[in-house]
Length: 115
Image 1 (tube, one colour):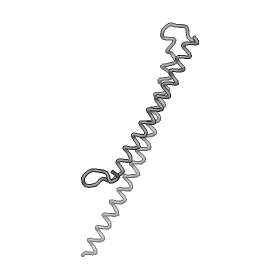
Image 2 (image 1 turned 45 degrees about the vertical axis):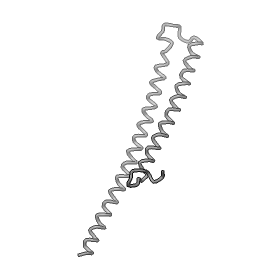
Image 3 (image 1 turned 90 degrees about the vertical axis):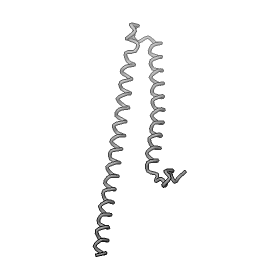
Image 4 (image 1 turned 90 degrees about the horizontal axis):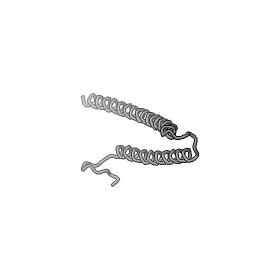
């Protein structure tokens, strides 16, 4: 009788372990999918902003191709790319920190053990 209970308990433990592993794999797969979608979104936003800037000088009715307009437009594009890249790096660092904090086990009082 005790052996039967032990065997059933071990089987349940194995099933729970397998389920936990499967869930972790699914979580990683979904995180990779989210990362890919975020990259696609960023790429599309960049393309959209570039398209908006292409018509910047033409909308005001000024002659297109003037040197000062082109220089300003290119400088603005460069600044926006740099700002976007900096913000993206900060966002990724923040996301990685949150992800790693989720993986850190916590003590019964709710504080992480690393603190």
